[in-house]
Length: 178
Image 1 (cartoon, one colour):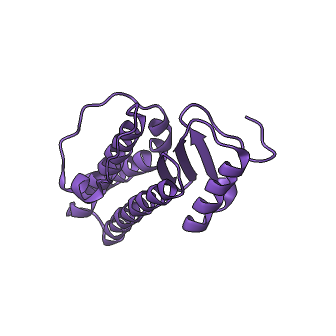
Image 2 (tube, rainbow, N blue to C red; image 1 turned 45 degrees about the vertical axis):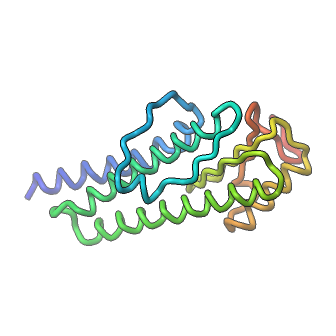
């Protein structure tokens, strides 16, 4: 009995560390990775891959998809574990559904931003906020505000929770310094 409790606690801590500790910061420190072996989760979570001239956006998407696939696989393992309580299993399944909804919303927003005339965009939705990376390399204050407004309306999130980044630098919103 004690071993089962320790195992559940360990799995729950792994999920928390993965979901809370490593998601956003790692995305911003893109490291070169090989193409991961496709798993069932990756196939379901895969977003359209669009190449940018310098490959940055494709790499960013791959890193984001890889991290999300790892999260989904870990949550599935927890949900499948016969020692997992019904409440923990339900929570793991809900998190999987939330990750799926986020991926769909991100892909939709990326398409919407491209339809608005931006050459390329990657959107990452997290609990702590939303990061939108845009090409061209420079945006006017008005363009930045337009992106923030669009993302805010589409997600229902406050504008203060949305960060717009160009390929080279963070773009300040009206009244903010870098």
